[in-house]
Each structure stands twice: as C-alpha cells, then as structure tokens.
Image (cartoon, rainbow, N blue to C red):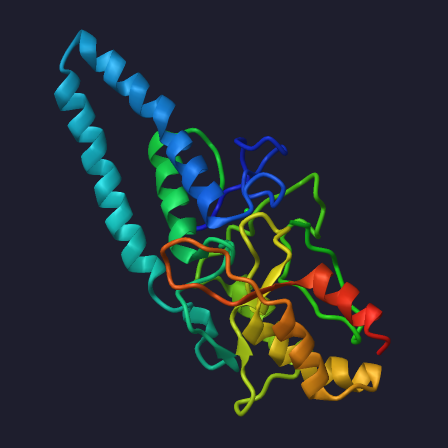
Length: 253
C-alpha cells in the first residue's frame, strides 16, 4: 500500500503536503473528512432503497481491506533483506514519519474504498547533497513543492531495492553501523522535511569530518532539536532537516 499521486489536496495532487497535513492530528482530521461525503452519499442513496444493506456491504469491504493492509504493511520491507539497513518499524516507503506507518496505510485504505483519488504530511524538504549537511529522505518528485507525490513502489519492488542499495553505499553503511530505514524510503508527499534521530546519528560521522567538529557535538546538536509528532501511537524521535542544517551553519562549524 502506497500513496497514489492523484487529486485531493489544497496544494495540488497530494494532501500529505507538509503545509496542509503536518502532524498526526491533522491526518486524523483529514482522514475523517475523507470519508464523510462518500459515506453520506451512500447512506442518502440507500434511503431510497435498501439503505442498511448498501451501508453494511460497503462497511464490510472497508473492514476487510483495512485488515489486509494492516497485515501486509506491518511486515518488514522484503527487498531490504541482506542490505545494511535497520528496520525498527513496518514498511516506510510512501509513509510520513510525522504520523507513522499506521496513519499512512489507513489513509490509503480509506481513499481506495471511497474512490475519491486523494493521497495522504513546518517546512518543506530540500535537496541537501553536500557532505557537511544532513540529508533528507528520497523524493519521488525531486523535492518539487508544486508536484507532491509518492513513489508507488511496493515493498518487493526491484527499483526500491536498487535505490536502497545505492543509498546504503552512498551513506557508507556497514554491518556494524547499519542505516536506519527512513533515509532509504521516500515519504508519501516526497516533501516531508523530517528524518528520525537514528538517521541523523547515522550521518553524524560524515558531517563531523566535513566540518572539523567532534561527532559528539553534531549528535548533541541534533538531540537538542528533537521533537515528537504527538498522537496516541508510540512516538518516533524526529528532527527537521532544514532546521538542523541552519543550526549547523549557525554553530560556526
């Protein structure tokens, strides 16, 4: 289950856009709004004839798809097997860290069941590539804020495997220092500025060397800017990449 690039957001094709859908709770609100009109339409149509039957049939399809999605999305990413990538959560491809994999697949199920074409995100990710900066997650839209969208790659995709292998090599991950999963997976909008604290720590040695700083100093800076997106799900410690890179420049390193 990945987010499809289709209609649905205030910012064009993708309502995971960080300026529209930035937190766990905004995603809850958008998910609720997503199904209000389709459900109301089904119910009003059914009032003419067989209201309860029509509603229960559609509800059963929703529950079935949610169960299937939960089963498959909870599994680890198949193509990461054998790569120096450490997965501590379910498949993150096409998911926003700010509201978790569970919030991502729930959105995908509801938009498919309601057939509305939507997809389910402080600042927008930027393409930092120089070694002295923290790098963001991959972007299926090349960080173009006007063209938000996911990659549509499945957990068994050969393209995902190739990209992940290239990312592992690019980051210099090894069996003793594995890369966290989020730098190897794209977000749902391709614009999410967040990475996990674990991903930031993976990059600390490279940045410390490039800037002539101690690794501890870089790690401590990242630790000072940690935030948690909120919501009832177990919180992931996240950092905002553009904000963190600005702090690096201000530190004088």
